[in-house]
Length: 134
Image (cartoon, rainbow, N blue to C red; front, side, top):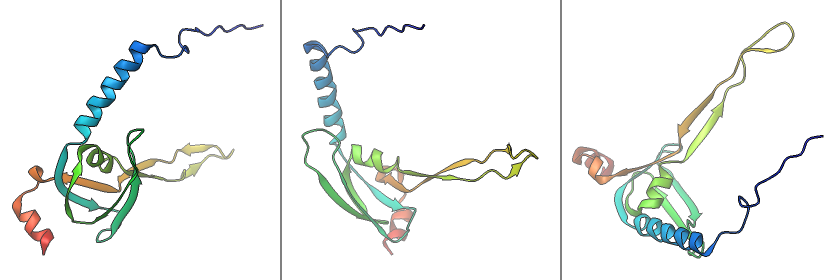
């Protein structure tokens, strides 16, 4: 027989002090995330295309829908810029070699490719911006 005891304090509801700390952290994140950043959007999956999506980062915020064209220079909130820089697709390759019993000798791999990019204007040089405009 096996008896596993779970610490009841670990799963207790949050205290008033903990809720206040979390609210403070959320306010701080919201304030930092709402700062506007000017930059260029790149849609590496479909260059020349556009990306439209809806988002809401915090509970209670309205749901916003955005349509951004590849190469467009826009002002977006910092949180959205970080989100756009963290959009990836994973491509899994199947195993290539098997032994006589059907077991995998050489495992497949998983490669990670970025789908979107948001490049802040302070990182762009003027020649790149002029080339994109034409």
